[in-house]
Image (cartoon, rainbow, N blue to C red; front, side, top):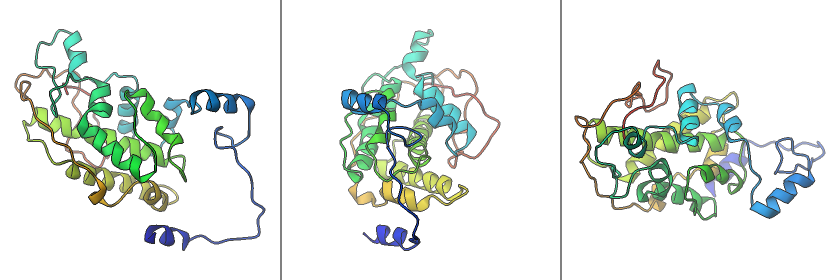
Length: 254
């Protein structure tokens, strides 16, 4: 409630006539086609690549999201198809690692998405990376750029943590540690827009970590930094703020 009061305190009302906007089209104008898609699918499909490229976030994160959306990041299942014979299990659990598993269905990732979903009063029941771009329609009061900021912060920090475990042979951190990094990154991006979007972010992204239900994960160190092939160019995994670097590829196993 205090967050809402603080956000509304900066709002100034005027005598301008209110305008009606249709939320299921980018231009805000009603179309029969958009209504039909909403009634049939429950959502209106969006051009996910446009939402990525238009987001006001670091270019390398845009490239990363684009690769994730196409399932082109080098997770263990993709390396296995290319001839790598290492352990293909998830670093957080005993399941086979795929892009869908790492970012969506793994208990570690799902605990983060559930935390956001509960705050916005919807159920996170998605099972693959493609449907992750449908959460836009479940979150109210959204600024067009905010959802991609949140999505980018979550996916990028999961990726960084996975790299840390594999290439630095680190231990699994409590999910609260990762969420703290997600909050820091999202707030940094939101506050550096032409118009500060922190207020909008606070309405969508929860701040209270007490509501975050942790998960128990078991690490399988069958694939360590020594036994994991390094393909392409490795992203600087210490770059937690997502600041611009010369790195352009995304490599390694997950």
